[in-house]
Every structure is written in structure tokens, then in C-alpha cells.
Length: 362
Ligand code: ADP
Ligand code: MG
Image 1 (cartoon, rainbow, N blue to C red):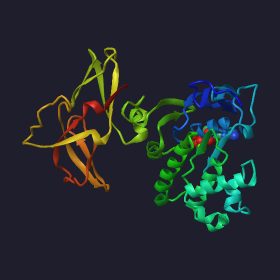
Image 2: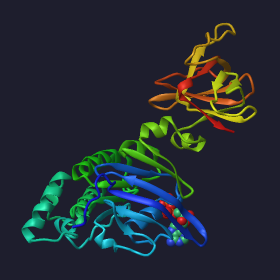
Image 3: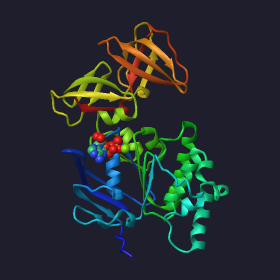
Image 4: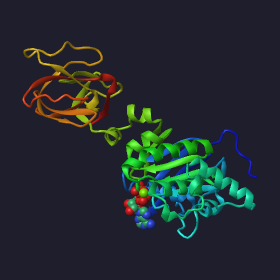
């Protein structure tokens, strides 16, 4: 047995790069993942997520970089542990079960050991995914969601140290998906594997992840807890990846920017630098017009700026209201919980929550 490095992460990748036809699709990616944790590799289509996963699985070679499991090198550019000896479980969107094998045989597929021992592990896992009654059924008799759970049981059966999952839920219909995500998460936590889950959906990452690694153009832009990624984003694109955004522009004077919404702090930004102040529609406050007078300025909401309602739409759990701003004719979007559908043409005052604004160089 290899010696486990004390305190080392279950999976560590250092400076992983891969180019196709001279284009670096994975560009110096470093990540570390602890056992029992789910890390979501989140990013738009084509940013290099699957390529990263394939290198970790060992089905693709990196041009540069190292991969370590429990502190032990499993792959660099010269040395390479073959995929089947990495104790890495894989689950992909097209998770095909073997159609000619029963559910039990599918789950037992990667298991070694005696017959009774294998049977016990198969029964345990099928019980845990709630499919014990299908043990002797064949895949075609199962629904898509049930097949998915069998595939998960199959991947977890050999007790992988690491589970790599590439958009595993994207083939499922919406109604099933939330339930299966939650069940999957519960099972993964019990197994204590380190999980790297690839997705392009921010909601999925927020729902599943202990940590999110935000990827763009082959690089990790930011890694952290979902709360931190959402509330302390690295740049404008990181804000925009999770929600609609509003942007106002300003120029810095004495670490402050003057805007129609009052002054914003721009600590450490040199004088004369153009900045963008970025905020989400749910952090816009709406106040009533009192004969052309806005609400008094406050520390948390600053100064109010007046806009005229262009349109308002009911979205189910919230309403989305679009304003044309008096000061420059720009559009600001606000979301309000429940129903708020003011008439187009109505003037209202808008404020912006200071602790939910992000100031980036423009
Ligand atoms: P993601 O999973 O984030 O959608 P991929 O890792 O699949 O992205 O792909 C990243 C980029 O690399 C894409 O532009 C894709 O077209 C390209 N790519 C992936 N695999 C190959 C390959 N085998 N040959 C050439 N280009 C590839
Ligand atoms: Mg992919």
C-alpha cells in the first residue's frame, strides 16, 4: 500500500496544460480536492472542463503538469499510472449500462474478490440508491433516472478514492434532476470519495458543491465556497455567470467614484482610472416617487436615482422590472420578490445595496 501523505489533499493537480493544434484548451490548471468534498468545475461550454477530467482519469495525456493522489504522483509528462490502476470512478452523461448484463452484474462489473463479498457490496449499494428490488432486472426495464442511479452504484462499487463526474445529470428531465442530485450527493458523502463534478450550470454547482472552481478559456479564474464565489467574484464575467447584471460606469477620484447613485468606494484604485460598478438585479431597491423627491440617502443604500418603468414581468417567485434611468437613459433591472408589476411610465427611485456591489477596472 502506498503511504498516504499526512494532510495532503486526496487529489491535487499542478499546472496542467493541454493543447490541440497549437491552441491551449487547458492552460496551467491547478486544483486540490479533499476527501468527502464535492468540487464543481464550472464554466461555459468549450472552456476545457472535460479535457481536464480526461487527463485526471488518465485517458488523455497532458503536455505539462502533474497529478497527485493522496500526495503520491500518479502522472507527469514521463511517468504515468494507467487509468485502471488509479482507483478513480467515472460517470459521464452518456453513462451506458451494459444492456446484456443484469443490474447486479452491471454494479459488480469492476469489483474483485469472492462471489459472496461482491454480492454483499452490490446489495448494499442498490439498497442505498433505493433500487434493491431491481437487482435481477435488465437495464431496459428501468427508467432514465433509475439507470442513472445504477450507473452511480456501479461507479462507486470498487470504492474509488476519487469520483469524476462529467455533466452527469444533463440527460435527465427537469423534474427528476433535483431529486437525483440530492440523492447522489448524500451517497457520495457517505463514501468519502473526493468528487470533481463538471457542469456548465451555475445552479447545479451551487446546489452540489462544497467548492466551486470557476473555469474560463482553459484557466481557473477563481476557486472557493459557493458563497464566496457569488459574493466576492473575481471579475465582471464571474458576476455575470451566475445572474443577470447591471453595470454603471465611473472614474475614480481619491479612492471614490461619483455616480447618480452616490459615491462608491474604490480602494487602491488610482485617480483617473475608469471603473465599472457591477450589481445584481436583486440588490436594487425600489422606492416610491414623492412628488419628484427620492428617499433620504442612507449608508447601506446610498443616494437614490430616478428611473421610469419600461416594463415589468412576473417570473413566478419574483418580478423583473426594467427602468429607463433619467440621468443617462441607460436601463437598470431590478427583481422584487413575489408580485410587483408597476405600470410602464411610472417614475420610481432606485437605490443599490452597497455591500453587494463590485467595483472592477473598466
Ligand atoms: P468543455 O468540457 O468545457 O465543454 P472540452 O474540454 O470538451 O470543453 O473542450 C475544450 C476545447 O478543446 C474545445 O474547443 C474543444 O473543441 C477542444 N477539443 C476537445 N477535445 C479535442 C480533441 N480531441 N481534438 C481537438 N480539439 C479538441
Ligand atoms: Mg464537456
